[in-house]
Structures are given as structure tokens and as C-alpha cells.
Image (cartoon, rainbow, N blue to C red):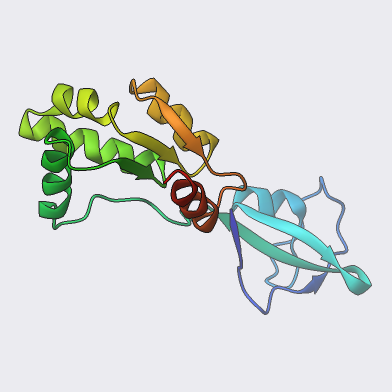
Length: 157
């Protein structure tokens, strides 16, 4: 949730009661009026009220890259048993692999051959998604950091 200041000039003394509508003077605001316009009053020092508007902002979203050839090649190499270890750093990464494998008609083959590899996960959320897809998670980083995941995989050699 992000908060943005609705206007730097909205700091006014609040003299009316919370349930009573104030006059429609531009210098007076009531809590009732702020609710009706989705503004949230916040009391600051000296009886001054600042009005904020709350908005939802997605912090990030994992999207499938436009260039999917490397992912298609990785799926094919997995099926040819060219990998010893498969590392997953997000549940969405698995969703993208399964999406492209399905598109290639290789979903079942990829799942079967993936279980011949050591499957490593960045953390519990990713591990849960891997297990739900039918993969056997052999390694899970703790703490959930890329460096820790790399150390775990390297220690398996």
C-alpha cells in the first residue's frame, strides 16, 4: 500500500465535530467529507489535519520475457538429461517453465526428467510450488538468499 499526499495545501485546523458536516468553505474539512472523497484525515502536530489518499501500487510483477528461446532450450536440455541440478528462485519461474513446456508439448517429459536432477529451491514458497507440480525438492536455501542457494548447490559436488 502506498500513500500519497493529496495536496500540500490541505493542512487546516479542524474545528468541526467528526460527525457534523462543515460548511463548504474551501478552508474547512470534516472527517465525513474526507470519507466521501476517499481522503483519510491524519492528525499532525498542533491540531493540524493532513488528508491522504491511499492507493494500491504493485511493487513488482514477474512476467514472462519476450525472448523465450533460452527457456525453450533449457526445457529441451532437461529432457535430454544435460543438467545435473535445476535451481528455482521463484514459484513464478516454475509457472513460466511449465507454460512453455506445455506450449512445446513437453510438459510430462520435462516433469519426468526434472526429477532425475537435483532440484534446488530458494525458499519455502518456491519449494511448495515445486512439490505441488510433482517435483522432488532436494535442497532449500535458508536463509532465502541467492548466495545461500549457490553455496548449497556447490556443496553437493
